[in-house]
Length: 371
Image (cartoon, rainbow, N blue to C red):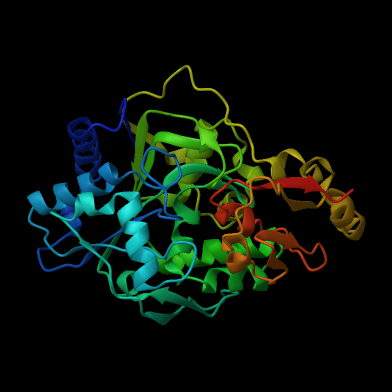
């Protein structure tokens, strides 16, 4: 399994383009493609935030991939994603504009098809079907372009987690509601990734995020891009670069248990791993969760107690709240109201998915323990 690493000091167009092009050449991407194929680029555009913040995939990454493809004879290139919030023309136009995706337009088309279709999962999957946005479902070739981040619910956001953006708009909170337990939610993400099956995953880790990701954390640059055909091994490897334990990330443990991770055949291509890497700060949700330190054989009999004692909940910081309603819009169980221009949370019914924290543009939601 080839794991390509190239060092990139900063988001400067030609160095980024050179590194992206070398990575795609190392993976022999052109051998997969013909000029008539529809290629879908799937960035992380979780919310409308400028490229100076380590929240979304940087537009120079997307532009460089599209430019390289077009310069090698591939012309039907679409940038497609369903961000947090409604999957509508009005919302996505704002996302594209703010996130800088228009920079890639000389080489690619921004998706403006807001339909979706039901796609069958392989036999034996917990999820028999997934609703996938048309741009992804109808693509001949998918290049996954995630941003490297920590994540309040899953612990890590990379290749697998980025494919949650294949689910249309506010259907994502519905899946949080269906799968409130991290084991079940992680299995859903893993099965979704096996349905979408991107051919290439290229991770933007020039600037990454630590702490309360995927939107409320802090910059932690790695000054590199990572690219591979094997998304599962790459995610496992990337978590190690962050100084985190891969098997503490449930979806990666599950991927490993399914035989999808092949660290024994990992072949590093390109630049060496820097020696001065520093560990990423974990999200507050993980810092407050001690369940991983409880012996596995005790977790089931003491499950009810652990859920009450160890569970984390979102906490509003009223002085930061502007009453925009993004938290209420994203809440799967609809326990958030906006009153007097402030969010009001009900603890009863909360499933601790932290969608509210994820989508808050003001960083007005923190994490607290149940007791």
